[in-house]
Image 1 (cartoon, one colour):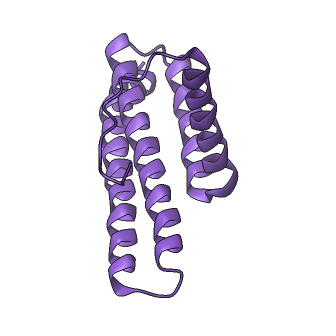
Image 2 (cartoon, rainbow, N blue to C red; image 1 turned 30 degrees about the vertical axis):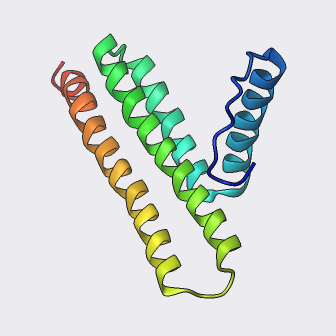
Length: 134
C-alpha cells in the first residue's frame, strides 16, 4: 500500500496493541521529563501549585481550572518538543523556515504558560486574600 492510501480492512480490536500504545505514550512522557529542561520546570511548578491547592482547600471548580491550565501547558510542551525533534531530522542544518516553525511552537508553550499564570492568579488570589485578611 502506498503512502496516503487507506487500508480497506477494518482492524479488529487488539488489547496488546492498545497496551503498546499506552507504553509508547508513557515512554514519551518519560522522555519529555528526562530530556526537556522546561518540562521539568513546568512539573516543579505544577507540584507547588498542587500542594498550594491542597493546603488552601480549593473548590472543585478551582481544581478544574488548575488541571485544565496545567494540562494545556504540558500538551503545548509535548507538541513543541515533537516539532523540534521532527525539524532536527528533516533539516539538521540551519533553515530559516525550520527556525520559524520552532519559534511558533515555542510561542505556543509561552502563550499556554501565560494563560496558566492568569488562571492561577484568578484561582489563588481570593484564597490568599482570605489568608491575609483573616
